[in-house]
Length: 135
Length: 135
Image 1: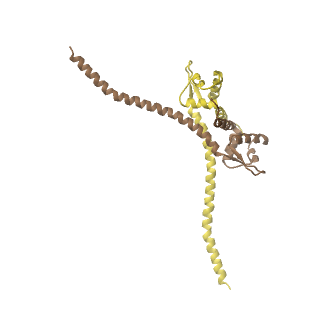
Image 2: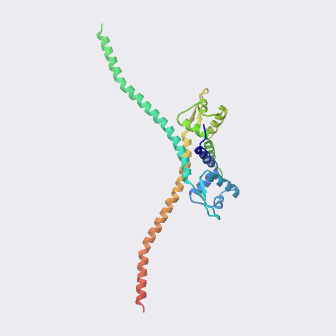
Image 3: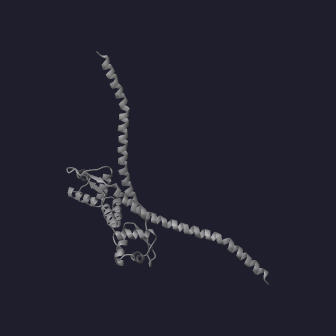
């Protein structure tokens, strides 16, 4: 099994979100763009550490940095976030489809049984009558 | 900022999904339960390596193992998968709300401008008339 470009993207995406500080940064940016200083404020960690987290988020395509050299505000890229939802929902749909197939199979079994039952009963009755009419 | 139990769960969840083999295992299990041997078949990696991946998925609550000592089939826990969707959608909603607020703000500005404009114009006209009537 080869790793496609899409898989590499998903590795980076899920990896970036596997950290509470980075998820908190993403949640903060969902409310609007912010500078590194603004993003660092609620955390008890150094600015270089925040910068490293931002680089991971940027590589994963979850944030982009503004061109304003002084502020370089960070912005959430919500379309990348949607890839997480799409992957999880796609897998959920496959899981649901399994139950749909099982349900359809059970319905078929039931309808087959209903379809055959009267015939079988009639045939059995005829057999019985026939059997009785014999000496 | 303290790391809550929920955050630790999300760390494990996103961390477990940050690997192509583990995502492939999850996708395979979405189609139905499977044994370790069945799960290992499409991969060019050793059984112990597959077992390690399964342990990561189990710790993240993404799969459960059957009690049948011989087979111990793996099953997907779709409810845990839904936590991924919930987190991403919750963040997406915050992002969308930002635009809704911006839209509401622009609407208010527009309606305020429309509400004041005639008054201002009328007052300006009166002022002008009054100004003209003066010597």
